[in-house]
Amino acid sequence: MSRFCKSAAGVLLTLALPAWALASPCDGTQVSSTTVAFDGAPITLQAALSRVREASPAVRAAALEVRARGAEADQAGRRLNPTLDLEIENFGGSGSLGGFGQNETTLSYAQTFELGGKRAKREQAARANQSLGLAECEVVLRASELQTALVFYELVAAIELARLAEEASSLSQSLSETVDKRVTAGAAAPPELSRAQADAASLQAEAVAARARVETLRYELASLWGEPAPRFILPVDQLPQPDRAALSTASATEHPLLALADATEQLRDAERRSALANGTPNLTVSGGLRRFEGSNDNAFVLGLSVPLPLFDKNEDAARASELRRDAARMNAVATEARLRADEAAARQQVRAASDRVQVYEQTAVPAARAAYEASVKGYTAGRFDLTTTLDARKGLIAANTSAIQARRDLAAARMRLNSLLGAAPFQGDFQ
Image (cartoon, rainbow, N blue to C red):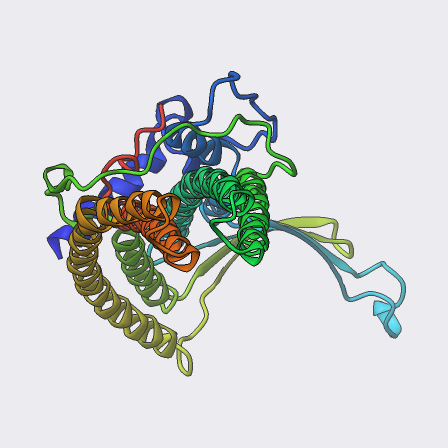
Protein backbone atom coordinates (compact mmCIF):
# COMPACT_ATOMS: atom_id res chain seq x y z
CA MET A 1 0.00 0.00 0.00
CA SER A 2 2.89 2.37 0.57
CA ARG A 3 3.63 2.43 -3.17
CA PHE A 4 -0.01 3.24 -3.89
CA CYS A 5 -0.04 6.09 -1.41
CA LYS A 6 3.18 7.54 -2.73
CA SER A 7 1.90 7.43 -6.28
CA ALA A 8 -1.41 9.04 -5.37
CA ALA A 9 0.34 11.71 -3.33
CA GLY A 10 2.57 12.42 -6.31
CA VAL A 11 -0.40 12.82 -8.61
CA LEU A 12 -2.17 15.14 -6.19
CA LEU A 13 1.00 17.16 -5.74
CA THR A 14 1.26 17.51 -9.50
CA LEU A 15 -2.27 18.89 -9.62
CA ALA A 16 -1.42 21.39 -6.89
CA LEU A 17 1.58 22.84 -8.75
CA PRO A 18 1.20 26.13 -10.62
CA ALA A 19 0.76 25.82 -14.38
CA TRP A 20 4.19 27.18 -15.19
CA ALA A 21 5.89 24.49 -13.10
CA LEU A 22 4.23 21.55 -14.84
CA ALA A 23 6.35 19.96 -17.53
CA SER A 24 3.99 17.31 -18.88
CA PRO A 25 1.52 18.06 -21.70
CA CYS A 26 -1.08 16.37 -19.49
CA ASP A 27 -1.20 19.31 -17.10
CA GLY A 28 -4.02 20.55 -19.31
CA THR A 29 -2.51 23.91 -20.21
CA GLN A 30 -1.04 23.06 -23.61
CA VAL A 31 -4.21 23.14 -25.68
CA SER A 32 -3.19 25.47 -28.48
CA SER A 33 -3.54 24.01 -31.97
CA THR A 34 -0.79 26.19 -33.42
CA THR A 35 1.74 24.32 -35.50
CA VAL A 36 5.44 24.82 -34.91
CA ALA A 37 7.48 24.47 -38.09
CA PHE A 38 10.54 22.24 -38.20
CA ASP A 39 13.88 24.00 -38.52
CA GLY A 40 14.69 22.59 -41.96
CA ALA A 41 17.01 19.87 -40.67
CA PRO A 42 16.21 16.19 -41.15
CA ILE A 43 13.72 15.06 -38.55
CA THR A 44 15.04 13.11 -35.58
CA LEU A 45 13.30 10.83 -33.13
CA GLN A 46 13.48 13.50 -30.42
CA ALA A 47 11.97 16.09 -32.76
CA ALA A 48 9.12 13.75 -33.67
CA LEU A 49 8.46 12.97 -30.01
CA SER A 50 8.48 16.65 -29.11
CA ARG A 51 5.97 17.34 -31.86
CA VAL A 52 3.66 14.60 -30.62
CA ARG A 53 3.97 15.79 -27.03
CA GLU A 54 2.84 19.29 -27.96
CA ALA A 55 0.34 18.65 -30.75
CA SER A 56 -1.04 15.10 -30.59
CA PRO A 57 -4.84 15.38 -30.82
CA ALA A 58 -5.26 12.40 -28.50
CA VAL A 59 -2.96 13.88 -25.86
CA ARG A 60 -4.50 17.34 -26.12
CA ALA A 61 -8.00 15.88 -25.78
CA ALA A 62 -6.93 13.93 -22.69
CA ALA A 63 -5.37 17.09 -21.25
CA LEU A 64 -8.62 18.99 -21.79
CA GLU A 65 -10.43 16.20 -19.95
CA VAL A 66 -8.09 16.77 -16.98
CA ARG A 67 -9.10 20.43 -16.96
CA ALA A 68 -12.77 19.49 -17.22
CA ARG A 69 -12.47 17.20 -14.22
CA GLY A 70 -10.73 19.99 -12.35
CA ALA A 71 -13.75 22.20 -13.02
CA GLU A 72 -16.02 19.42 -11.75
CA ALA A 73 -13.90 19.18 -8.60
CA ASP A 74 -14.30 22.93 -8.06
CA GLN A 75 -18.03 22.49 -8.48
CA ALA A 76 -18.10 19.60 -6.03
CA GLY A 77 -16.57 21.85 -3.36
CA ARG A 78 -19.31 24.49 -3.60
CA ARG A 79 -21.67 24.99 -0.67
CA LEU A 80 -25.41 24.46 -1.07
CA ASN A 81 -27.37 27.53 -2.01
CA PRO A 82 -29.77 28.99 0.58
CA THR A 83 -33.48 29.35 -0.14
CA LEU A 84 -35.77 32.32 0.34
CA ASP A 85 -39.39 31.40 0.99
CA LEU A 86 -42.52 33.55 0.92
CA GLU A 87 -45.77 32.05 2.26
CA ILE A 88 -49.22 33.67 2.38
CA GLU A 89 -51.74 31.74 4.48
CA ASN A 90 -55.39 32.08 5.52
CA PHE A 91 -56.77 34.15 2.68
CA GLY A 92 -59.55 33.79 0.14
CA GLY A 93 -61.57 31.58 2.48
CA SER A 94 -65.05 31.95 3.96
CA GLY A 95 -66.37 34.15 6.67
CA SER A 96 -63.75 36.20 8.45
CA LEU A 97 -61.04 34.55 6.35
CA GLY A 98 -62.33 35.96 3.11
CA GLY A 99 -60.00 38.27 1.19
CA PHE A 100 -56.71 39.24 2.80
CA GLY A 101 -57.94 40.76 6.04
CA GLN A 102 -56.85 37.84 8.24
CA ASN A 103 -53.98 36.38 6.18
CA GLU A 104 -50.56 35.58 7.58
CA THR A 105 -47.47 36.34 5.49
CA THR A 106 -44.17 34.64 6.29
CA LEU A 107 -40.83 35.53 4.73
CA SER A 108 -38.09 33.09 5.70
CA TYR A 109 -34.52 32.25 4.86
CA ALA A 110 -33.36 28.63 4.97
CA GLN A 111 -29.91 27.10 4.76
CA THR A 112 -29.10 23.40 4.55
CA PHE A 113 -25.90 22.32 6.26
CA GLU A 114 -24.25 19.15 5.00
CA LEU A 115 -23.16 17.10 8.00
CA GLY A 116 -20.69 14.25 8.17
CA GLY A 117 -18.13 16.04 6.01
CA LYS A 118 -20.13 15.44 2.84
CA ARG A 119 -18.83 18.43 0.94
CA ALA A 120 -15.20 17.82 1.79
CA LYS A 121 -15.41 14.14 0.93
CA ARG A 122 -17.32 14.86 -2.26
CA GLU A 123 -14.61 17.28 -3.32
CA GLN A 124 -11.90 14.77 -2.39
CA ALA A 125 -13.57 12.20 -4.64
CA ALA A 126 -13.76 14.74 -7.46
CA ARG A 127 -10.08 15.61 -7.00
CA ALA A 128 -9.27 11.92 -7.08
CA ASN A 129 -11.19 11.68 -10.33
CA GLN A 130 -9.11 14.57 -11.66
CA SER A 131 -5.96 12.68 -10.64
CA LEU A 132 -7.33 9.65 -12.46
CA GLY A 133 -7.80 11.79 -15.57
CA LEU A 134 -4.19 12.94 -15.31
CA ALA A 135 -3.03 9.32 -15.03
CA GLU A 136 -5.17 8.39 -18.02
CA CYS A 137 -3.62 11.23 -20.00
CA GLU A 138 -0.13 10.01 -19.11
CA VAL A 139 -1.06 6.56 -20.42
CA VAL A 140 -2.29 8.10 -23.68
CA LEU A 141 0.89 10.16 -23.87
CA ARG A 142 3.18 7.17 -23.35
CA ALA A 143 1.25 5.13 -25.93
CA SER A 144 1.45 8.02 -28.42
CA GLU A 145 5.18 8.37 -27.82
CA LEU A 146 5.74 4.65 -28.36
CA GLN A 147 3.67 4.65 -31.55
CA THR A 148 5.69 7.62 -32.80
CA ALA A 149 8.99 5.88 -32.07
CA LEU A 150 7.83 2.70 -33.82
CA VAL A 151 6.62 4.59 -36.92
CA PHE A 152 9.82 6.65 -36.95
CA TYR A 153 12.05 3.57 -37.04
CA GLU A 154 9.70 1.96 -39.54
CA LEU A 155 10.33 5.02 -41.71
CA VAL A 156 14.09 4.76 -41.19
CA ALA A 157 13.95 1.08 -42.16
CA ALA A 158 11.85 1.92 -45.22
CA ILE A 159 14.47 4.48 -46.29
CA GLU A 160 17.21 1.86 -45.95
CA LEU A 161 15.12 -0.70 -47.81
CA ALA A 162 14.46 1.84 -50.58
CA ARG A 163 18.18 2.51 -50.80
CA LEU A 164 18.80 -1.24 -50.96
CA ALA A 165 16.17 -1.58 -53.68
CA GLU A 166 17.95 1.13 -55.69
CA GLU A 167 21.25 -0.68 -55.28
CA ALA A 168 19.66 -3.98 -56.29
CA SER A 169 18.19 -2.31 -59.36
CA SER A 170 21.62 -0.91 -60.20
CA LEU A 171 23.19 -4.35 -59.78
CA SER A 172 20.57 -5.84 -62.07
CA GLN A 173 21.33 -3.22 -64.72
CA SER A 174 25.06 -4.01 -64.50
CA LEU A 175 24.35 -7.72 -64.80
CA SER A 176 22.06 -7.06 -67.77
CA GLU A 177 24.90 -5.19 -69.47
CA THR A 178 27.25 -8.10 -68.77
CA VAL A 179 24.76 -10.54 -70.30
CA ASP A 180 24.36 -8.25 -73.32
CA LYS A 181 28.11 -8.31 -73.90
CA ARG A 182 28.19 -12.11 -73.67
CA VAL A 183 25.25 -12.46 -76.06
CA THR A 184 26.89 -10.05 -78.50
CA ALA A 185 30.10 -12.06 -78.28
CA GLY A 186 28.18 -15.27 -78.90
CA ALA A 187 29.09 -16.66 -75.47
CA ALA A 188 25.46 -16.72 -74.26
CA ALA A 189 22.08 -17.44 -75.79
CA PRO A 190 19.79 -14.46 -76.61
CA PRO A 191 17.05 -15.63 -74.17
CA GLU A 192 19.47 -14.97 -71.33
CA LEU A 193 19.45 -11.28 -72.22
CA SER A 194 15.64 -11.16 -72.17
CA ARG A 195 15.66 -12.92 -68.82
CA ALA A 196 18.21 -10.49 -67.37
CA GLN A 197 16.26 -7.49 -68.69
CA ALA A 198 12.99 -8.79 -67.23
CA ASP A 199 14.70 -9.32 -63.89
CA ALA A 200 16.11 -5.77 -64.00
CA ALA A 201 12.67 -4.33 -64.78
CA SER A 202 11.18 -6.27 -61.87
CA LEU A 203 13.78 -4.88 -59.47
CA GLN A 204 13.20 -1.38 -60.80
CA ALA A 205 9.49 -1.75 -60.05
CA GLU A 206 10.34 -2.93 -56.53
CA ALA A 207 12.48 0.18 -56.06
CA VAL A 208 9.50 2.34 -57.06
CA ALA A 209 7.33 0.49 -54.54
CA ALA A 210 9.98 0.97 -51.85
CA ARG A 211 10.04 4.73 -52.45
CA ALA A 212 6.24 4.79 -52.27
CA ARG A 213 6.42 2.99 -48.92
CA VAL A 214 8.66 5.78 -47.63
CA GLU A 215 6.11 8.39 -48.68
CA THR A 216 3.29 6.46 -47.00
CA LEU A 217 5.18 6.34 -43.72
CA ARG A 218 5.99 10.06 -43.95
CA TYR A 219 2.28 10.80 -43.99
CA GLU A 220 1.62 8.30 -41.21
CA LEU A 221 4.25 9.91 -39.00
CA ALA A 222 2.94 13.43 -39.62
CA SER A 223 -0.62 12.33 -38.83
CA LEU A 224 0.44 11.39 -35.30
CA TRP A 225 0.68 15.09 -34.41
CA GLY A 226 -2.35 16.05 -36.47
CA GLU A 227 -0.77 17.32 -39.69
CA PRO A 228 -2.52 16.30 -42.93
CA ALA A 229 0.76 16.40 -44.88
CA PRO A 230 4.38 16.02 -43.77
CA ARG A 231 6.44 19.18 -43.61
CA PHE A 232 9.68 17.63 -42.43
CA ILE A 233 12.80 16.43 -44.20
CA LEU A 234 13.40 12.68 -44.19
CA PRO A 235 15.51 11.43 -41.30
CA VAL A 236 19.13 10.49 -41.80
CA ASP A 237 19.23 8.33 -38.67
CA GLN A 238 20.39 4.74 -38.96
CA LEU A 239 18.82 1.72 -37.38
CA PRO A 240 20.59 0.75 -34.14
CA GLN A 241 23.25 -1.89 -33.85
CA PRO A 242 23.33 -4.51 -31.06
CA ASP A 243 24.53 -2.96 -27.80
CA ARG A 244 23.40 -4.81 -24.70
CA ALA A 245 25.37 -2.45 -22.50
CA ALA A 246 22.92 0.28 -23.53
CA LEU A 247 19.95 -1.51 -21.98
CA SER A 248 18.45 0.35 -19.05
CA THR A 249 18.70 -1.29 -15.64
CA ALA A 250 15.50 0.40 -14.46
CA SER A 251 12.32 -1.54 -13.84
CA ALA A 252 8.76 -1.08 -15.03
CA THR A 253 7.53 0.12 -11.63
CA GLU A 254 7.20 3.72 -12.86
CA HIS A 255 5.01 3.02 -15.88
CA PRO A 256 1.92 5.26 -16.26
CA LEU A 257 -0.31 2.18 -16.12
CA LEU A 258 0.75 1.69 -12.50
CA ALA A 259 -0.07 5.30 -11.71
CA LEU A 260 -3.42 4.77 -13.43
CA ALA A 261 -4.13 1.68 -11.31
CA ASP A 262 -3.14 3.53 -8.14
CA ALA A 263 -5.26 6.56 -9.06
CA THR A 264 -8.23 4.27 -9.71
CA GLU A 265 -7.86 2.73 -6.27
CA GLN A 266 -7.60 6.16 -4.65
CA LEU A 267 -10.75 7.28 -6.49
CA ARG A 268 -12.73 4.23 -5.39
CA ASP A 269 -11.63 4.73 -1.81
CA ALA A 270 -12.62 8.41 -1.94
CA GLU A 271 -15.99 7.41 -3.39
CA ARG A 272 -16.43 4.94 -0.53
CA ARG A 273 -15.78 7.65 2.07
CA SER A 274 -18.15 10.01 0.27
CA ALA A 275 -20.86 7.34 0.18
CA LEU A 276 -20.46 6.72 3.92
CA ALA A 277 -20.74 10.44 4.58
CA ASN A 278 -23.90 10.64 2.50
CA GLY A 279 -25.56 8.37 5.06
CA THR A 280 -25.49 11.22 7.60
CA PRO A 281 -28.67 13.37 7.44
CA ASN A 282 -28.38 17.03 6.59
CA LEU A 283 -29.63 19.81 8.83
CA THR A 284 -31.79 22.62 7.47
CA VAL A 285 -32.14 25.77 9.56
CA SER A 286 -34.70 28.39 8.64
CA GLY A 287 -35.64 31.72 10.15
CA GLY A 288 -37.84 34.58 9.15
CA LEU A 289 -40.59 37.09 9.92
CA ARG A 290 -44.35 36.48 10.02
CA ARG A 291 -46.92 39.22 9.55
CA PHE A 292 -50.47 38.89 11.01
CA GLU A 293 -52.75 41.18 9.00
CA GLY A 294 -55.74 40.79 11.39
CA SER A 295 -53.89 42.30 14.36
CA ASN A 296 -51.04 44.08 12.53
CA ASP A 297 -48.57 42.12 14.64
CA ASN A 298 -45.23 40.70 13.61
CA ALA A 299 -43.36 37.67 14.96
CA PHE A 300 -40.17 35.82 14.28
CA VAL A 301 -40.23 32.19 13.14
CA LEU A 302 -37.47 29.61 13.46
CA GLY A 303 -37.38 26.12 12.05
CA LEU A 304 -35.16 23.05 12.05
CA SER A 305 -35.49 20.16 9.60
CA VAL A 306 -33.63 16.83 9.75
CA PRO A 307 -34.48 13.79 7.58
CA LEU A 308 -35.02 10.60 9.56
CA PRO A 309 -32.70 7.85 8.23
CA LEU A 310 -35.21 5.08 8.83
CA PHE A 311 -35.16 3.38 5.45
CA ASP A 312 -32.11 4.66 3.61
CA LYS A 313 -28.69 5.18 5.19
CA ASN A 314 -26.83 4.91 1.86
CA GLU A 315 -25.28 1.69 3.12
CA ASP A 316 -25.72 -0.13 -0.20
CA ALA A 317 -23.95 2.61 -2.13
CA ALA A 318 -21.10 2.53 0.40
CA ARG A 319 -20.84 -1.24 0.09
CA ALA A 320 -20.75 -0.98 -3.72
CA SER A 321 -17.96 1.59 -3.50
CA GLU A 322 -16.01 -0.65 -1.13
CA LEU A 323 -16.30 -3.58 -3.53
CA ARG A 324 -15.08 -1.41 -6.39
CA ARG A 325 -12.16 -0.25 -4.25
CA ASP A 326 -11.20 -3.85 -3.54
CA ALA A 327 -11.43 -4.63 -7.25
CA ALA A 328 -9.22 -1.63 -8.04
CA ARG A 329 -6.69 -2.83 -5.48
CA MET A 330 -6.61 -6.26 -7.12
CA ASN A 331 -6.20 -4.62 -10.51
CA ALA A 332 -3.25 -2.58 -9.24
CA VAL A 333 -1.46 -5.73 -8.08
CA ALA A 334 -2.26 -7.50 -11.35
CA THR A 335 -1.07 -4.51 -13.38
CA GLU A 336 2.29 -4.49 -11.62
CA ALA A 337 2.70 -8.23 -12.18
CA ARG A 338 1.76 -7.89 -15.85
CA LEU A 339 4.21 -5.03 -16.37
CA ARG A 340 7.01 -7.03 -14.78
CA ALA A 341 6.19 -9.95 -17.08
CA ASP A 342 6.09 -7.61 -20.07
CA GLU A 343 9.46 -6.20 -19.03
CA ALA A 344 11.03 -9.66 -18.86
CA ALA A 345 9.56 -10.57 -22.24
CA ALA A 346 10.72 -7.26 -23.76
CA ARG A 347 14.28 -7.80 -22.52
CA GLN A 348 14.25 -11.25 -24.08
CA GLN A 349 12.99 -9.81 -27.35
CA VAL A 350 15.81 -7.26 -27.36
CA ARG A 351 18.39 -10.00 -26.78
CA ALA A 352 16.89 -12.19 -29.52
CA ALA A 353 16.75 -9.27 -31.96
CA SER A 354 20.38 -8.39 -31.17
CA ASP A 355 21.45 -11.96 -31.88
CA ARG A 356 19.57 -11.92 -35.20
CA VAL A 357 21.29 -8.70 -36.26
CA GLN A 358 24.70 -10.12 -35.45
CA VAL A 359 24.02 -13.34 -37.38
CA TYR A 360 22.88 -11.46 -40.47
CA GLU A 361 25.55 -8.77 -40.47
CA GLN A 362 28.51 -10.88 -39.36
CA THR A 363 27.73 -14.07 -41.28
CA ALA A 364 24.78 -14.06 -43.68
CA VAL A 365 25.39 -10.75 -45.48
CA PRO A 366 29.18 -11.19 -45.96
CA ALA A 367 28.66 -14.75 -47.20
CA ALA A 368 25.90 -13.70 -49.60
CA ARG A 369 28.00 -10.81 -50.92
CA ALA A 370 31.00 -13.10 -51.48
CA ALA A 371 28.79 -15.64 -53.26
CA TYR A 372 27.34 -12.98 -55.54
CA GLU A 373 30.68 -11.44 -56.43
CA ALA A 374 32.09 -14.88 -57.19
CA SER A 375 29.08 -15.78 -59.32
CA VAL A 376 29.39 -12.57 -61.37
CA LYS A 377 33.08 -13.23 -62.01
CA GLY A 378 32.31 -16.84 -62.86
CA TYR A 379 29.50 -15.89 -65.25
CA THR A 380 31.68 -13.29 -66.96
CA ALA A 381 34.38 -15.96 -67.40
CA GLY A 382 31.81 -18.46 -68.63
CA ARG A 383 32.17 -20.84 -65.70
CA PHE A 384 28.66 -20.25 -64.23
CA ASP A 385 25.27 -19.99 -65.89
CA LEU A 386 22.92 -17.03 -65.53
CA THR A 387 20.60 -18.88 -63.14
CA THR A 388 23.41 -19.30 -60.62
CA THR A 389 24.24 -15.61 -60.81
CA LEU A 390 20.62 -14.49 -60.47
CA ASP A 391 20.11 -16.80 -57.52
CA ALA A 392 23.24 -15.45 -55.86
CA ARG A 393 22.04 -11.88 -56.35
CA LYS A 394 18.62 -12.73 -54.94
CA GLY A 395 20.36 -14.29 -51.97
CA LEU A 396 22.36 -11.09 -51.41
CA ILE A 397 19.25 -8.91 -51.64
CA ALA A 398 17.37 -11.22 -49.26
CA ALA A 399 20.24 -11.23 -46.75
CA ASN A 400 20.52 -7.44 -46.79
CA THR A 401 16.75 -7.07 -46.52
CA SER A 402 16.64 -9.45 -43.57
CA ALA A 403 19.49 -7.57 -41.91
CA ILE A 404 17.61 -4.27 -42.21
CA GLN A 405 14.41 -5.86 -40.94
CA ALA A 406 16.31 -7.38 -38.02
CA ARG A 407 17.72 -3.99 -37.04
CA ARG A 408 14.24 -2.50 -37.40
CA ASP A 409 12.89 -5.20 -35.09
CA LEU A 410 15.74 -4.48 -32.68
CA ALA A 411 14.84 -0.78 -32.64
CA ALA A 412 11.17 -1.61 -32.05
CA ALA A 413 12.04 -4.04 -29.24
CA ARG A 414 14.24 -1.43 -27.58
CA MET A 415 11.54 1.20 -27.84
CA ARG A 416 8.96 -1.12 -26.30
CA LEU A 417 11.32 -1.97 -23.46
CA ASN A 418 12.28 1.65 -22.84
CA SER A 419 8.62 2.62 -22.92
CA LEU A 420 7.96 0.10 -20.16
CA LEU A 421 10.92 1.34 -18.14
CA GLY A 422 10.38 5.05 -18.71
CA ALA A 423 13.91 5.21 -20.11
CA ALA A 424 15.12 7.47 -22.92
CA PRO A 425 13.45 8.72 -25.00
CA PHE A 426 10.44 8.20 -22.71
CA GLN A 427 12.00 9.57 -19.55
CA GLY A 428 9.36 12.28 -19.19
CA ASP A 429 11.60 15.28 -19.90
CA PHE A 430 9.23 17.70 -21.65
CA GLN A 431 11.19 20.89 -21.16
